[in-house]
Every structure is written in structure tokens, then in C-alpha cells.
Length: 201
Image (cartoon, rainbow, N blue to C red):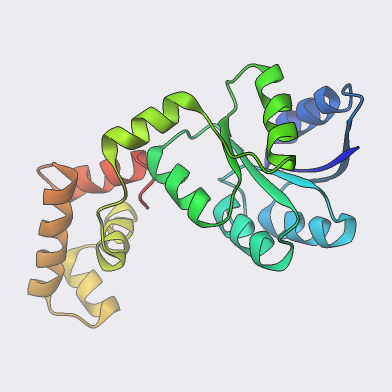
């Protein structure tokens, strides 16, 4: 029997997945969680074989949960199941210790097979997303450039970023200019949007 933990912040999606999986003779849902923190606590209590985790959740996101589970419970296989099929998320999820990455619009039988496969140690990646990841490559942004673009996304100005990060405005502009070049955009707002869409932030 494959013991599964479901972590998704949408109760209806979580319930539907649980009902679907419980129809399988060899799969049982041992816990459900609506946030990253709940997922970690539930994993410690139930020791699942597979943790089926969404990326965007309250508290710790799915990538942070995957990383912590990989460190603290290495026998638990991690399968990311998300609406956001972004290339950057795929590479970050695998780096965090995930064994698989599927998108929610995949057929139900694909998800069931993915759970069985990752439990067996087989890596599973949505084919379309794998192709897109090869097209866009790995995240080219430095951690400082990512930090700047996140601040842009929050509406911060150059002088505000400079003050918060204890940098000169010229240094901030240089980092933003580099990020604009790497994303192939014309403005810092466009760069932040493209980086977010590709899962680089």
C-alpha cells in the first residue's frame, strides 16, 4: 500500500484528489494539508511514502517543503503537482529533492501512474514542461538579480531598493540592467513579469 500525503491550499482540489486516489486499491491518503507548515507537521506524524505537494501554498511554499522533507525524511518521495507548469519551477523542484513534477491538467491516470513510479524511485516529469525547460534553460539570474526583481514586483523603486539592501542606486540599476538583458525584455517591470512566468523567482 502506498501511503500518500496531499498538500494543496485549495480544499476542493485536495478533496477531489483524495477521493480519486482512495479508489485505487494500492494507494491510501494518510493525511491532507492546506499549507506548507501543515504539510511538514502531517509528514512527521504519518511518515508517508509519497508527498503530493502543490507549489503555491500559504506559509512555506511547496519548494521549501520539498527541500525540508528531502533533508528530514529522505525515504519519502516528493511529487510536485501544480497548476503552474513553469520551467524554472521544474529545475528548482528537482534541486530541492523532488522525484517528480506533474501539472494538474494531466489526465487522472497519469497522476496515479506518477505516484506509483516515484514510489519506485523513477523520476517523473511532465513531457511538455521538460521540453519547455530545455528551450529556456536554467535560471540565468543571480540571487541578487532575483531579489531585485521580486522587489520590482512588489512595487519598490530604485532608491527604496538601494536603501533596503544598503547599495548605491547605481549598483541597483546595474543589477536590474543585467536582469533585463538576461530576460530579453525592455523594462524592469517586464523583466520581473517574465522571470515570474518562467518560475525563476
